[in-house]
Length: 194
Image 1 (cartoon, rainbow, N blue to C red):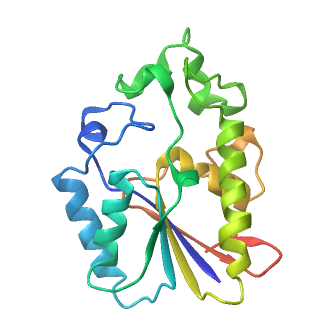
Image 2: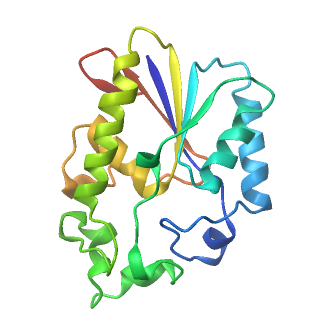
């Protein structure tokens, strides 16, 4: 079984360099165009089902990628982006400030402390692992190919599980770009990045 893991298209806040988290921000024109173009690139590939974050930037991306196909898109609350609490809407580059606990988000995720009202990376990893184990892996013999459209940190947490990484290596090969797909194959025992 194959799994396409896709980050949503660019949003207004992405373009402004603002932290989004659980805020429900729309795609901008560049994000819409990129999702449409990616959908055209994979138009001949069959997907049994598409799963999406309920946030509109991810759901709209999923719809645009699906295009004219009738593939079912199902949202799941466990696919919402990591909550950045009181830091949402602030400059994305706040992590460069070494006096801020958010500083460790990219440099050493195992030491990351969420801002007030934010979510820990451990909690994020638990909910995405739960989603993969309860929803995706049981479809090994019933689905040929599935898609998840979600968010940067959310997708990194899924890959942390799929590649059996620790929090120290949370970012693996780095933050996905907007509308970037990472493809995995599952044989019932392990996930392999293609």
